[in-house]
Amino acid sequence: MTMNNNQPQQAVTDERPAWMETPCEPWAGHITAQGYGRVSVKGRSIGAHVLAWTTANGPVPKGLVLDHLCRNRACCNVKHLEPVTPKENTLRGIGPTAQNAKKTHCKRGHELSGSNVIGTEDGWRICHTCQRLHDQAYKQKTAVGPEKAYRNNKKSGLRGVYQRGNRWQAQIRANSKAITLGTFATKEEAHAAYRAAAERLFGKGSNAGGNP
View 1: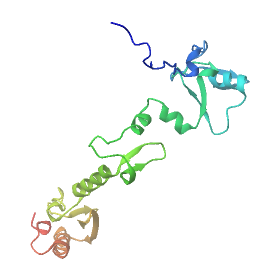
View 2: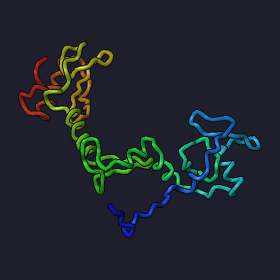
View 3: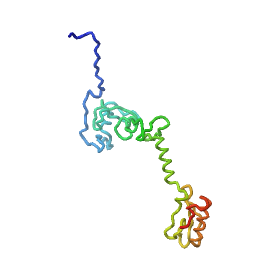
């Protein structure tokens, strides 16, 4: 069998980025817990990679930070560094903010695009659908209806009646807010005020205004 040498062959190109042509140059001095080299210059502590960049290229452009293309934070090879915005630097990383930015759907399957995305100043994206459902569930959980009105107070033995010094205070909840009805000489008077308010708010015979 003969080979057809006239068939076009796919060209092989080297797509390696330029920075990969040279090895990392790790800082030999102090390394922080975050993995960055630090050096003191005229009494001021700066990143070792920043010092390497400024020595070779001058100051880092205003408003930009240096991104390690090699992902090696201790590296001081200026060919491995690129000035980028703080946001771009964060999104290029592997931290939670960067991972969140790469998501197309939230953990409940809602698409993260358009009006369904709530952006935060620190780069997080929040699912608007999930947030709305969470708010609804919270309101339902914290809503106080007649059946969830004040339980009997331990000291007075009466619902919605609390001792304040030598007097008795009547209090009721409506729309998740506590309403003080006044203080009275006896707990029976306070409880009568509570029951009257319960009937006005929740209807006659409601559990909120029932007997203890």
